[in-house]
Image (cartoon, rainbow, N blue to C red; front, side, top):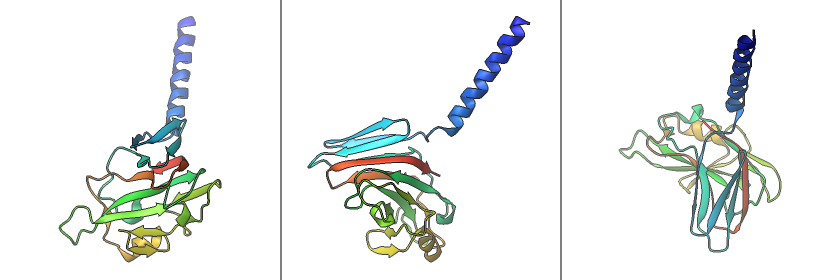
Length: 180
């Protein structure tokens, strides 16, 4: 009887651990260069840039190449500073009609989604109010418009989408990250 209770308790504990890990934040890799720091606290990432700092950010650490633009979901919530295109997604894009593997980056940033410093702003490929810039030259109203205008584009194989803050000193807080 005692052994059966221990086995049952162990099974319940294992099931509890499985449910916790199923809802945990995605595993990401952080990076910081030249005076920037990235602190991680239970799925919240604080990217701090001092004056003159370069950049800090995070990525899932794996390429998601080959997915069509309409098949991806990227989102995060910005809670800190918003400045100069930061924080933003930098998403590597391949145009299969060219010989290059990487034809440029699509950018979605907090300001382009209507965000201002200190407000909670969702940055997402699913939102109609999040403008997209491709290759720093072409703007689209949102991700759906970008995907519709470029139906053959894919995420570039061998390149990793990432979230970055750079250029302007501040404290950029990112949470609720989805990279799929």
